[in-house]
Structures are given as C-alpha cells and as structure tokens.
Length: 501
Image (cartoon, rainbow, N blue to C red; front, side, top):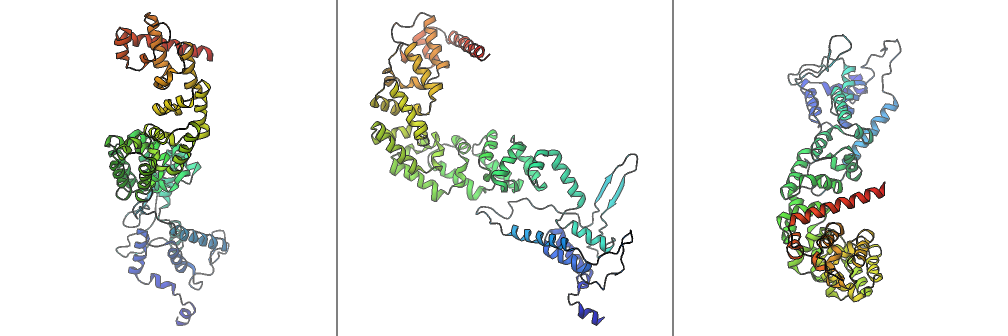
C-alpha cells in the first residue's frame, strides 16, 4: 500500500477522505465559489488520475474495451474553456460599475431538493427522473455510481441543472425567437428584456442595443429599474425611454449616485427649470457619458468667455439646443463665425445674437446648410445687408427647407400677395409661418369676405393669433374662420391626392 501511494503522490482519494471535506467541496460548487479550473482538477483526480484504482477490464455494453483516460480532443476543449474563463476575468470594470451591477448566475439545486422532470409520450404514464444527489449536510453518500456522478459534475460545470438549461432554452426561443437566432442570448438577460419590453422595446431594438453596446444587456434588472425610474422622476417621459436607450444604451450602466444625479444637478445649476430637465435628457442622453469637470463645465465656460453668451442666458441657450453641451464648441464657433464674417460682413454682436436666438446654428453644415440658403436669399434680390437683418431677426430661416418651405413662400408672396421681396426685411417672420395653416387660409378668407386691400397684401395680418386676426382684420367669429380653413385644407389635400393618382 505504501509503495502504491508513493507512486502516485497526488493522493487523489484524499479529496474524498472525509465526508466533511466532500461536503465542503459541493457547498462551494453550489455557491459558485469553485472555479472551473479547480472543478476540472477535482473531477480528473477523483475519477481517473490513478489507473491502478480503476478496473482495467471495463467494457461497454457492446463488449468494447473502454479507455481509462479521456481523449486528447476532450482535454484540448477543456483547456480552451479554461483559457476563455481566464480571459473573461481580465475585463476592465467601468468607473461607476459595482460588483452587483450584472445579473447574478442562477443557483442550481444541490441540497435537500430533488430535481424532477416529467415527459409524456402518447398514452404512456408520466415518467420521472431524479438527479440522485442526496443531502450533503447530513453527510450521506451519493447514490449514483461514480462514473455517472463524474459525468453529472462535468455537465453541470456551469452551475446549471440539465433540465433547467432545457427549460431556459425553450423560454428564450418562445419569447424571443428572432433574438435567439441572431445573437447568443443568455437566459440571465431575460428578466431585463422583459422589463425593457414594458417601454415598447421589441426584438429589433434589443439587437440594436446588442450591436451598439452588448454590456448593457448584462445589467441586473434591479439596477436598470432603479436608474430608469430615477430618470422618469426628474421628468423623462415613459415614451421617451426607448429612444434614449437606443441612442445611449450605456445609460443602463450609469449609477444614480455617481453619475445621473451629478449631471442633473449640473443642468439645474445652469438655471434650467425642473420642467425641462426630462426634455433635455431625452434630446441629448449622451451628456451622461461626459465628465462634468473635464468636459461639460469647460464647454459652458467657453460659451461665456469666448462666444459672449451671458450667464443669465445660458439656461435658455441650452434648452434651445442641448446638443451644444456635447460638441466641440470651439471648432463649431470659430468656423461659423469666420464664415458669416467673410460671407455677409456680419459683426460679432450680430453673430452672438444669432447663436443666442438659434444655437442650432452651431450644428448646421456650412456647405450644405448655411451657404445654400444665403445664396437663395441673394437670388431673389436681397442684398447682404438685408440678409443680415433677416438672419439676425429670424435665424431659424437657416433651418428651413429650400424646396418645401422658402421657395413656395416666396412665390406666394410675389404672385398671390403682390408684395416685393424687400417687405421680408420688415416682416421676416413671414418665412417662418406655415403656408397651408396660416398664410393661405387668412389671405383667402379675407378675399372671400371682400376685405382684402387692393395692392400689396398686408403681411402684418399673418402675425397675430387666430382670435385677434378675426377681431382686427376679418370682423367675424373665430368658428367661421376655422370652418373655412378646414374646408380649404381638405380641398388642398384632395388636389394632392388626385395628382398622385
């Protein structure tokens, strides 16, 4: 006996020398504390590390001799899995992520419970099977033969019961069939997917999130719920959550205390009212990925010190264009300032007024946005000084479509209202009004009442509200005007439909 033990210094039987040691190994296995590498060593040493212990004449039920060792292919697969496990452990943690952020692995049923499954075939009675593990706490032995016990440990190395894997796979395929086909869907993600589905998210949306930021789907559902509920508590609407997650899925990883609250406090510090916080978050969810001290505050400081926006106007500017916080403001400002100065001879004060009224100006492309609209105003007979007056008063003109907005309004101004283009310098608001909803209905209504003046139609009649227009210009009831406008809109719609046919 001593000689045999000296030949095999590993002493594999010592792993099962006492019931207490044996129980502790399985308790670790149950709690997920026994790593894959140690589990493999446990299985190998206990089952086949000493050929003298095993029966050398073992044969299969077909009479073929069985090998004492696993094949080389299986060993290679085990090594590859172990390397993958080690690689997974090297993943970097995010600054604001904690150990509890990701979904916990499911516990498998080792203990006093017996795991059973039932299958029905035709008229056969229900058949039951049990895993065969008896209580380890009372130090009773395992009823399965050792070879089957080792196989069961290998099957359950991931910490799951075979029947449980089958059930999870069926649930995934049934609830998210497309998702299961296109991505390696983990059953641990299901609670999070079910919760996010309450915001109107579908399988196609989950695929987009997976492609943009897969780690977002690994977040524990409790953590995700805490973060989204906080966002809704500061004003984000339920219907906007889906759009926010599609644009910035990383937001599921951002903790409330270390990230979300500090950005919300920053917005409030700029003078933005609580009623607008949710709208700003929905418009620019990426602001949560920017550092307050190293990015957001320097951007605000540049707007004040370099651009010339007054601190009291910062809140208004941010509300009009939240994206200004997450762009390279220095490059955007310098390029557009130089362009407007060179193209129109605009002084700095006029450009600052443009940015204050319409900060989206800093996002517009020069070649595809600003220049074509300036050239259009030139083409209809406006001088640079007139264009500057219009843009300073109504910078939104730079955001209007040429074909669907500016050109039709100009043609109606000249051909129907009998006005000159110079009238736009006095009433630049005309270009921002709806042709179908305001300009044409009011003009036609006054013509039908025979109250339209001869000569140029007064553009001032388009400025007041509908009620004031009826009192001051039409001298009739609001209901009568609204009914006229509705008939006109239906007629216009019918004409468009006939042209399409």
